[in-house]
Image (cartoon, rainbow, N blue to C red):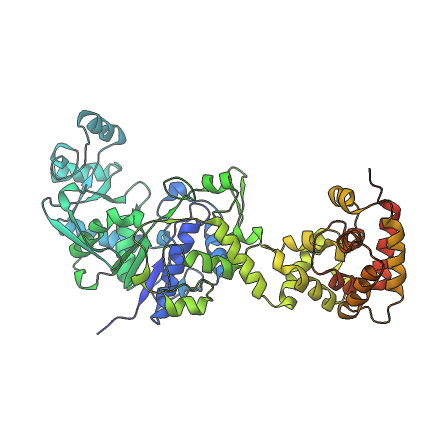
Length: 509
C-alpha cells in the first residue's frame, strides 16, 4: 500500500533563515501539496552551543509570510510530536541503547587532546575500522573499565560502527543511484553525553522514521551524509520504510564561483534573508526581502525558478500554479546562479498585476513616512495616482519618488531641464497657457489635450519646449506619466497655482 506523502523542513535555530533554506522549504511544500501530502516543520536544536534566541520565531514568521503553510510543527502540534528535538531526549536515548545493544555502535572516551594527537600522528586520520582499536573506546578497553569511566562521570560520545568494504547505494530522485564505498566513511558521533543530546545524524534518522517521512528533500550539501543515513536505517531494521532522497542543487553567487553567502548580498546590495534579522549578540541588522519591499508571492515565484522550470517558458506563476506544475523531472542537478536583478523583475511584474486599491493601501504607510497624511485624500485619488505611475516601479517605496508631485508641489526644478527648456519668452507663454487652462469648461485629459496642443500649434510655438516647460512647473522635472493625466488629477486650480510658482521661481543662469 502506497504511503501518504509526508515531507519535513528541519532548520536549526542558529540564526536567520537563509534564502537557500527558504527554497528548500518551498520545494518541500510544493511537492507535498501536489501529492496531497503533509508538510512538517521540525526544529533541529540539538546543537546547544549554536542556539540563537529568536531564531525559531523568525523561521515560523518567515514561512508564514511566504505562504508556506505548515501542517505539523511546534506551533501547529500533531500526533508525532514533540517537534523540537531538544524535547525528544528520551526517544533518542532509547534508540542509542538499541544500537549499542546490537553492537552497531560503541562508546568512545577520547578527549579533544587525544583526537588532536591522533590527527597529528596520522595524515588524513579518520576514526574508523582501521584506527578505532588504537583509540580509547568500548571496543578497545575492558567492559569493567567502560563502566567505571561512565560511573565516574567521564564524558563520552557514542559512535556508529561502520564496517568497511561495502558498496552503499543512495537512491536519489534527482541524481539517480549514488554509490559510495563504506571504507571512506568515518564512525560518526551519534550522541554526546556532555549535553545528553544526539547529533544531527541520529536525531534526523530517528525523527524521519517515527514521523513517517516519505521524502527527504534537502540541499546537496547533505549528500555526503546520505550513505551514513542509509546504513543507520538498515541498522535499526527500517530499510523497508526508508524515505526517498532528493538533494537539491546549491544557490550560487551571482558572480564568480561558490555558494551564495551573506557577504555576497552585502557586497552587491541585495538581501539573503526573507525577513530583516537583528542579531541578538552583535546587534548587527541584516536586511530582508519583506522590509526591502518585495511581495511574498514574487519571492516565491523567483525562488521556485532557481533550479527548476515548468517545462516551458512560463515565468509568472501563482503558488497554486507552481503546485500544479512542480516536478523533480525539471529540476537541475547543477547549481543555480542567484540573479537578484531577476528578483526585482518579478517584484515589478507582481506590482503591475496588483489591483490599484490594494497597491494604494500599501502606499499609504510610505506617504506617512514622507509627512503626507493619506487621510487628506480620497482613496480614489491615491488609487488613480498609483495607476498612473506603477509601471515605473520595482518596489512600493518607489511610488513616492515617482508620484511625490501629486501630493506636494515641486521645491526645486531640474537645472538641466531649465537650461534646455526655459527661455526669456517662457514666462510669457506660461501666462498665456494659464489663460487657456482657466478657459476650459472640461479639464479632463481627453478634453484639455487637444485644446492646449491646438493653441501651441496655432501660435507657432515649439511643441517640445512649451510642453516640457509646462511639465517642469507642475512636476519639477521633465518626467512622469501623460501630462494631461497629471493635470486632470491635480485639478485646474492646483495646476495654475504651480505654473505661477514656476514663473516666479525659475530663473535660468
